[in-house]
Amino acid sequence: MCKILDFGKFKYEQQKREKIQKKNQTISLLKEIRLHPNTDVHDFEFKAKHAYNFLEEGNKVKVVVMFKGRELAYTDKGEELLNKFIERVEEVSKVETPVRMEGKAMSMILVPSKTKSKKIN
Image (tube, rainbow, N blue to C red; front, top):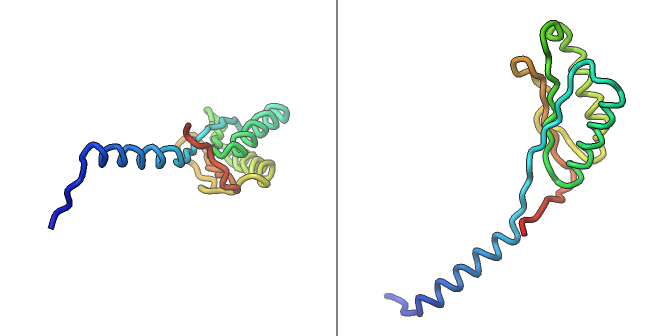
């Protein structure tokens, strides 16, 4: 059994369906915030505000604490900083990947708690 139809009409409908799917597609970017264990209070608040805005826009945020030289001996300071960061943005985010050490960097990933994502135009 076969169906005879206009190939041009079939291609047009297929393109139309793909265009609608692309229009309704959401995109989530991964933004990165870098800190150091001795980051000052003002710098910390400034970066936390940026992360807050990224999360409100629907983007994921990777927060990284970079250690240099002797700072590696004070990884507890970095973990403390990341926990403070979680508290600062907890109303718009939740932790996707918990705090973990990767070489000379300690990182975590935060995702928006609301499902407000950017749409592709």
